[in-house]
Length: 376
Image (cartoon, helix red, strand yellow):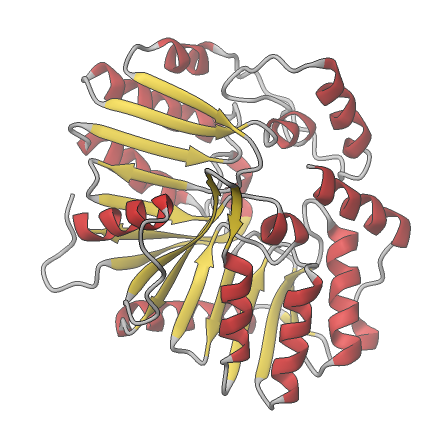
């Protein structure tokens, strides 16, 4: 479970939206579950009861039956997405109170109809939940996604456990080495400060004894304010006004901003386009549109630093949710892989020639979607 000798401790697992784009991540999770000897920790937002959900569920169950201790942190609010979108099934069954079911129905009106029918039942999920070696913590306002195997290997990024991620453009990152997992634990506990000189460090919105600490937004703004030449943004959901202002400010200093954007997001499409219209009205940003769903959350600054992970630059991620991003600098192989992949995605997409070429949006739906972000 260690990296190749001489290799960098982090590598990119690419979801390229080719119909099985998330396969490297899911394959690698299965491999690491099969190799795990002592412990596995999984923190997941959406875990759908579909082919991928059951496939990873069976791998978790097999590890538990070998005696591996499994801890799963699962977000409660994400059950809404599991039960409104796609096959409308959650891998882990959770009875919902009437008020939450009512809220799902109301905000479900702002979601596109994506229903697909299948015959998956609750057998595997129920077996995982019932196994004595599996502990499940239900958490709320958490959007984090990671796997940790034997405290030696960590996978983190923005890929949920569900079939549709095979058609999304997305990223996960494999980080090898006990020292890096230990560093994450220290950062997660709040016992050490972010070190901007480290090759790999972690940014977190986290729950503390005093409430919540939202450190990702100010650090993102700081990074955008420090950009000198270029910023590449590949982001599923946008809309936080302070991040938008930092983007506008960067263009005022002559920084070239490129934003890769979905033609249609799976949720929040109107609020996305409203925010993009506002940015482009105020700044000469190069917008590139792809027909594939961008689910990534990645910022590449001056081709020398990457901030990526689970955090969108939306109101929900910046002000409400527990999130995890990784910050990487000074690792040439990794940075080259990010640059190459970003250039490939831009080359396969369609540049918008002027702000007038941006897709229009529905103001009423954008308002409802914004309300949903605040109330989730």
